[in-house]
Amino acid sequence: MPLTPEELDLRRDALATSTLDHGLQLLGDRWTMAVVLGAFLGVRRFDEWQSRLGIPRHTLAQRLRALTALGLLRQRPYQQRPLRHAYHLTSKGLTLYPHVLMMWSWERRWGARASDLPERLVHIGCGQPFVPWLACEACGDKVGIGDLSFTLEPVDALREHPPARGRAPRLAQAEGGEPGLGLRVDRWALLIISAVLLGCHHFDELSHVLGIGSSVLTRRLADMVDTGLLLSQADLADGRRRIYRLTPASRDLFGYILCFSGWASRHHFIAPSSIRPTHRACGHAFVPQVVCSHCQQPLLAREVRAEGPAADRVTRRPRPATPPPGAETP
Ligand SMILES: [Zn+2]
Ligand SMILES: [Zn+2]
Image (cartoon, rainbow, N blue to C red):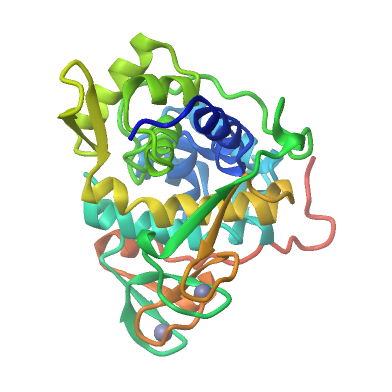
């Protein structure tokens, strides 16, 4: 059943004012996410990032500056002459951990670069290997996409522009090439998947809701069909139209989308999201929590050990930056 014009406008306004979209504008490009993932795997130094990610120098410099401006990384000198800096996750940076775990879990299952990621995660709390599970903070139950219902309430504060606070410098378009450690999907793929999740299945619906012109949308949809993120089927009710549906791989991104959107609401914009999930079983507003599949306790970066060849290439553990007095440089 096609959506009514009112339903389409509501979805358009909700997506445009979602903390998901606004957060992805800051962190949603693949190089940025690759740098964040590297930081959680213990990468600290410029050259280490460059060799690990295969990222051009000026792109890396720009992403590190942007992440520092957002308060997610902090510079600390590790050598005085010549002066060199390492980049450490701040306490705000560490709040991205549930999202990073979801990204890791998705990439291990569906990504093209699984071998760049640690093979195993061990929860130091219970001593067992685990996979990250998405759970409801209110009742603690494991949650799948079918366990949630969504209400849409566009947020006026996010309607026109992203809030100035913590706004990143504008990022130049990244050069071609696939980032090592990077997510296979980018901002637009995640927004298209979110629109399909909200019931937009036809080309004209997606174009209206996302405000993407036909030629760009045609190309993006074709890419997503090619890479297994969307299914395109003939619409039995109208042979001239195609219907776009999620695949198992893109359905599996919902945990990633919910954790990132929750992070952007709670730790960056400090504003409710326009897309509000409810956990049907317990009736509470759904707040994502990522827990250990073995003991079901929430996971903290300092309580998780990564194992396998990718993890062995770095030895340092992520922890918040606490610079010694006077060591900070401008
Ligand atoms: Zn619940
Ligand atoms: Zn555990």
